[in-house]
Image (cartoon, rainbow, N blue to C red; front, side, top):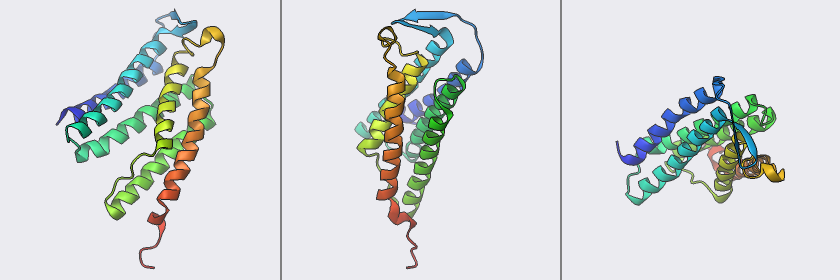
Length: 194
């Protein structure tokens, strides 16, 4: 197992840690940072999420740079990303920070695009690469999750709901990039017997 794959496995291991931090009421108190009052357990969960997100950036760069792309990495890396993001959004709904309908759209899009990518790989053996709208979606998702967990740290003092702004930008790019994937991959649904 190469280093990028180890980073992916580490990210997967961090998901239950992230979940436990948010699922159990640890009663660790509050932090006052950057104009925001943040429950300590949310702050620690945000740090775990940031570390997991950074491993996502790092493992892909290392795999491409060192020519260490493997079938395990192709499978586990996007799966780990989706698991991390979907887990975060589900917990943000339970914390009252994200409307359930927004999380439902994000989760449904992730599942639909994952299914489409699998069909495309099965049909022509090629992985559908992430386009720019998908990359913007991922970046805004990560920023939304971090700032919502951190109660808009650094922006709270000026009453700027940065996490919420990122959430709705992410929602726009979630829908837009999902539609873009299906438009580009529509040939996969054509009957091969025609």
